Image (cartoon, rainbow, N blue to C red; front, side, top):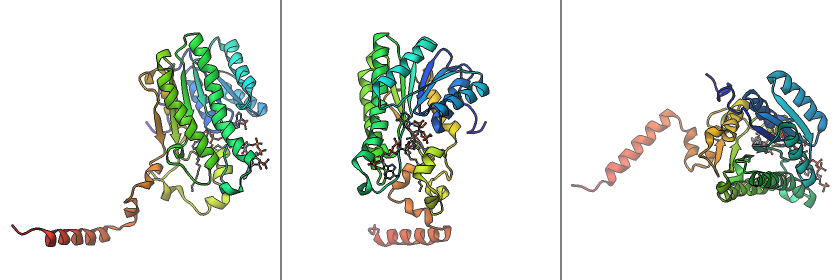
Length: 296
Ligand SMILES: CCCCCCCCCCC/C=C/C(=O)SCCNC(=O)CCNC(=O)[C@H](O)C(C)(C)COP(=O)(O)OP(=O)(O)OC[C@H]1O[C@@H](n2cnc3c(N)ncnc32)[C@H](O)[C@@H]1OP(=O)(O)O
Ligand SMILES: NC(=O)C1=CN([C@@H]2O[C@H](COP(=O)(O)OP(=O)(O)OC[C@H]3O[C@@H](n4cnc5c(N)ncnc54)[C@H](OP(=O)(O)O)[C@@H]3O)[C@@H](O)[C@H]2O)C=CC1
């Protein structure tokens, strides 16, 4: 068994219909593909109909699963409602939602226009709560114990410069996850989140790790486990969180980042110390301890 293999058993998502926003590309596409392999019906949506159509064809062929797509800008409530209506029309009901659509780019904040900030916040925060609110109303009215999975980021908790609109919006999504998890638990609706570290995708790399940066920074130095994530690792966790296997978990955010977020540890700079230096340091500390000991 390796980390690039599917984790859940065949049929683990049988009879579930799951909407994956931003499911035409990147991590959304990988999650959608794995959900199909586990027997789910999948609806993918985003703005680009041609990208969605190609992905739906590809995944239908590679998995033999049931998938449909609807073009939708998550910032428009009427389009969000159309996706849900089409999912119900096609598959009879909706059981799960993965809020994965996002917009982001690195920039010094003082260079941003108001519109640039609004664009990111609207896609990430507004888009997520529009979809969650619309489905929550449907689930409560129809007594369906739905599940929401929100894809956030590690800096939703730590904060981060140079991606401030995304950090503000993802933090809002995280707070919504926890708040609604409590409020809607009485309806059997669960909400959880994943905070991924770096997982190579064209969308993220073009906007957050362009060539100019890639030449200067290496993931091997940055990430304790010395690699980026594999899409299947994220899909495995997502499938678990959207499945009934996680029925007792709600309001949780799970970090999947090879330990990247732990770099704030105050003594982590000691990574640079060699074995010989440690021998000398140990001697110094022990000697200071002996000198400082109170005589018996
Ligand atoms: C050292 C190691 C670090 C490695 C890090 C690795 C990666 C870690 C990942 C961390 C977390 C990742 C989170 C993610 O969200 S990744 C997902 C990224 N994917 C996308 O963003 C896909 C969708 N994005 C887009 O479509 C566009 O990028 C955009 C969000 C901008 C939306 O496009 P749209 O066409 O709707 O908008 P406009 O082009 O009209 O732009 C709107 C305003 O924004 C201004 N803008 C756009 N880009 C920039 C820029 N680069 N800098 C400054 N301003 C920008 C644009 O000018 C518009 O404003 P104005 O009209 O006022 O000019
Ligand atoms: N890759 C990584 O390292 C990390 C990613 N993440 C998160 O993972 C998720 C997926 O990102 P990733 O796969 O890397 O990047 P992608 O760019 O591939 O995915 C973003 C998706 O969002 C869709 N989208 C953008 N704007 C809208 C909109 N207005 N309405 C509907 N859909 C929209 C895009 O499709 P379209 O353009 O057709 O609308 C695209 O499919 C995001 O939430 C991101 O924040 C978090 C941490 C790290």
